Length: 195
Image 1 (tube, rainbow, N blue to C red):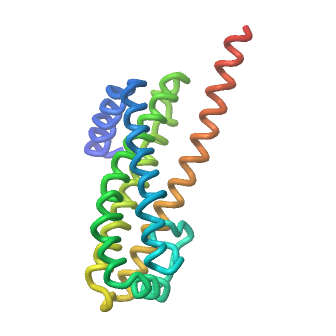
Image 2 (image 1 turned 135 degrees about the horizontal axis):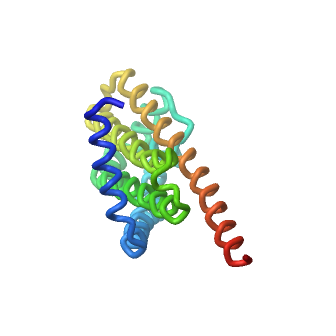
């Protein structure tokens, strides 16, 4: 590993370890949940209503094509595009960061409890950070498409779609890993209590 990468890794790892506090992680988890629930129950249904039932780009984990993007932006109309830009996306610019930090710390917390904080498994803590980075890239693409509509270049839709797929894929991977870690943690506690 190059020296600069090693230094960044050590600094980030130390920051994660320094923040492995159950109450702090719970607070992050609650804030993340509140933002996500607000989007799921308020802004996304409203946007779907503006779009006549079409799914918004953020909620298409398997991706979309430029034709769908133009159909969606057209169906949203000026009011829907403004709502996307000024209500949904501001929330979605807060969410990726706090979600990434939350799940990074959750992994760190469980790895510490399992005695794996110094193992190669620690790299899994970084998966939520990459998902958050791709979520921000997706959001920037959507903002750009909303601001340039109807003159969106096809390449913009293609690149934004790539970021959407990367975000969804990494989120799915770390969610499955987290389920496995939780099962492992629970089984270990159960075995320790039964001894």
